[in-house]
Length: 440
Image (tube, rainbow, N blue to C red; front, side, top):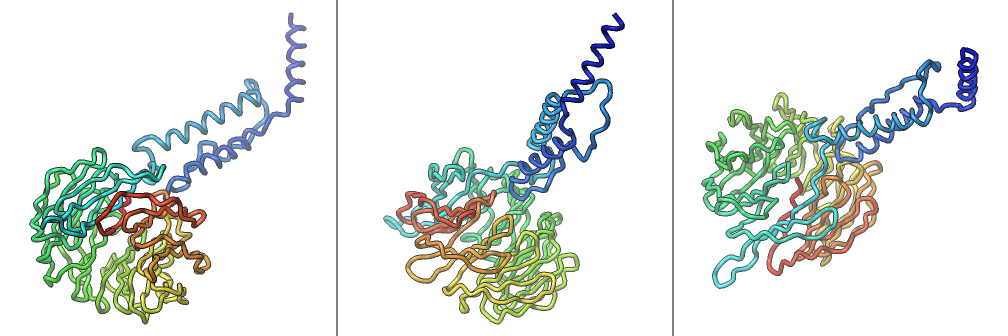
């Protein structure tokens, strides 16, 4: 019997040597790479390390696992890592699946029998590009915000109407003392509160948990707000007013800070992804504001009337749309200097940048047909104009795959991979004005 056991052991050793087992570390490394690629496909996600690491294959020892079994075990572990990344509440918020619906908003345009027609919000599936059942809103004056989780839309009118995106049904109106309708609405990135300004110039915080308005915030200068923007952590709101100032508001205490003086006629505001700098678009210049000290920097002279501003996700470049010059001007956030204008050759209105920062899309309003012009942010060269029909409102889906351009009675989806427009989405609006596309 001992001789038989020894013979069997020798045969097993010879078989093992001839098998040439796969380097387990290589299998793990390849699986880790694929795992990271799958996770990275989610919008704005960070690269996640797999469980394999850089383990080196050691010498064969008793209990050695055959190559096929080892590969199966590695695949099982890698599959587990992807599953864990997909679990609700696990990992950073960037790993959560992207919302699959955008909402086209239309204002009423005409009166019928002396009564205002209702406004309309159209849900559109980003998977099928098909419209859902329209949501009708009475006394809609234009303007709406959506919670970051995509569960609730707040539409503005003589009161604020909360709308459940699950049922499409409006809830009880929120009487926020809007006095004829809000002037500006903005949603806090934390989703807990959104702010609106009424016609008297006060800022009113509204809780999304209770749908109840809080105490009005009165700005020191008492000027009508023109625009609001939040730092990414939601701790500070910056309110642009017509008095050449920007007022910071502590969203924890809802107390306004000291007004920050900027260049003349401020309008739009954009804040970098790291929250360190706010860029205020003024008439002929852009004023940077250090959000830590709330001190303005030296204005960046543009030399042309400005229409819109957007910042790349990496925070390295700001793009300013200028109307008279029919151009887009890149600004280096590191040097605070304007670069060479990107000439579009037609009037431009607004701008949107893809989540990966590779392309900036500029809407043109010149001529009977409106177009969208893609700009390669690596070369700052404009591409071939994309004909979308009449309209200038646009938004990019959360996953960055599709740009939705809004027109009077249809939505045009544009693939950001090919820059080609898809089949127009008919929304069934006969009377209405495009007011925007909401993306969670």
